[in-house]
Image 1 (cartoon, rainbow, N blue to C red):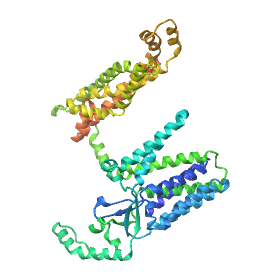
Image 2 (cartoon, helix red, strand yellow; image 1 turned 180 degrees about the horizontal axis):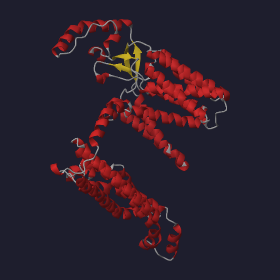
Image 3 (spheres, rainbow, N blue to C red; image 1 turned 90 degrees about the horizontal axis):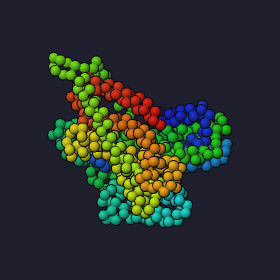
Length: 542
């Protein structure tokens, strides 16, 4: 419960901080309320265990409402708070009431004992949500194209229907995405007789289980008096029949979202009660944006396993690394080791990789960029087709990271800088091609029209009207791209594409930190030199 209190106080503190800044507080009540509804429906809150770890399910609060109906107070309290935000001075009371109700209802859930529940998958819900998402994505195009709104909306409906059908087809979504079928689950309570029968079955099978554990050298298990004594493991037969052991005390990231947002709503309401003037006309629009950001950030922090405690645990290694890395070893003649010489050689290779890759990309990007510019390819249907094909080529290839290209090329041509050069060239071709084409499209039409009025066309217009305008930009973009490519080439060395990255990876793996740090220092120096030189050159050209 301590961590739940900490989450709540963090939300209250953020609200008070926003209040000191004299910003609108009603938007925080709205944003927290809308985000709480998302958390209630979609975010895991506790843990429901089965026989094996793969049987574990993290139910949402909505999924747990049949087990603990008091949880329904959460959306009701939030909805009341949102309604009160529409009534001017009552917004503060809405925030306080909504936040308090959420904290009481959610907090009371964690005071419940472990209990046996039955899992009931809701088939079709995930498929419907995906279909609606596909339809909505296509329908968004209708807002920017009013004249084509009806065909776009029809296409959106068709796309949504096809997505829903594909998920239900025998060789469709179920075959490729088996976890999507029945993804959302409700949990219903079980009769006390079922729980008693499970306890008896577990105790009866305990001697056989303990005999196996004894052979494995493990500690014997004791008979249980309640399901809480199971410590998360339920019999295999019960697990296969859809039973799970819900443990309210096991918090998931939805708990952080619930208590933090409830604290934020409560704190914002308190500030509003003290100063009811802290509101603005567009609070609901801002609140929707806050809710969207919170709904994306909360699961993102969990998915990335963000945990500052890991830094505390890993601190001894960082100290050991610093002790072994400093002072750097520049040379050891007795052992015939010369790290500085090797670093200078590899840093030169890295610069050359970036230089050659950027040069090749610029050479091929220049003609391609004219084919990807609207104002150059707007003449005939054939040229328009060339424009769309070129843009598609650049967009598809730009979506593949340099590192992935390098991995493929290393497997194809072997270790060494050649794979790195080609990876840089291929990816930079797409970047420069897009930048060059946008520069061409933004070129002044005056010189072009003047030349066309004299009868000039084609290559002459490009040579005398467009190139003089865009060439300084081309050079500036190329220099900047070289700066980016040098940083990319550092990472490419880690996958065997040569350069200083390969040297650092090798020394790090062998524990020779005093040599590795020489490479790190060299990178810092060269990056700053390239950065200053690039900035100076671009300032002189543009």
